[in-house]
Length: 307
Image 1: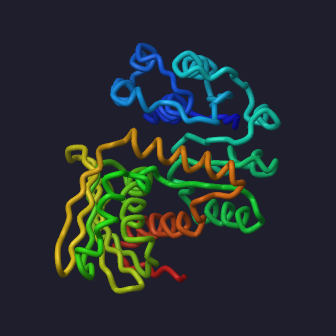
Image 2: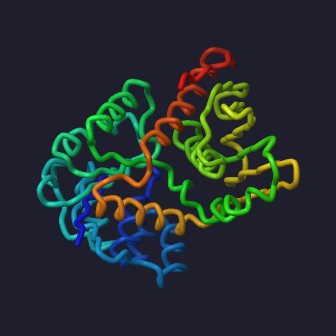
Image 3: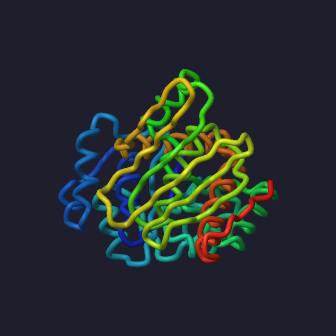
């Protein structure tokens, strides 16, 4: 049995509840609703028959507030609350850093990296070039670090990826989503890169505004793409592909499915003692994310990404 520790929470991010429920196979809907996540209890209820991942259990939890930690233990049957992050070391086989505030990721990840504990870090891995370089150096030194947006495992995107050849040579890809660039732009980039088979980004240009992001991408094979992320639109996550012979519009809605498949891939990686997702793919996405922010800060200048 793989024992997993989970770290949370950051504002508005219910992953310590939902991900632990998916792994452990149990949830208390009343408690999850009480703390303000009725959408989570709804999709867990709808997929109750798929809950539980054999061979793994979330056994330990840490949050910045013991009351939150104890709520998580009640809601999803996590057995142990720790008061300090490092207490998990030696008690768990792997750790999920389920906070999506990337400015704290290095600080929280470092004890586990130094102790050689396999680590999954929620998106986005980093919000600065310095932090990204730290993680890249640790991976180069053989440390087990896996990170991505669960959009990489969206069933809707993977279904279209299987039939991409029928579209002919792609000419344009677009993605549209809601909310802020750093925390949610990474979702759109992850899904876009995955469905395009992780092409090499060459240049990035942000021609929108803060809260109304419009980002142009060019890839090494000449394909152009745009990413649109707006705070004040109805909630949606869409990707469109346009080829010489056909096109597809994909709307991603199955959050449970992508979370579950993401967790399964991490657990399989722990079993194999090697991340099944190449860090180079994550690094490409985070570099693109940061380059778009840099372009916006410089008035829409083209930022070139050196491979």
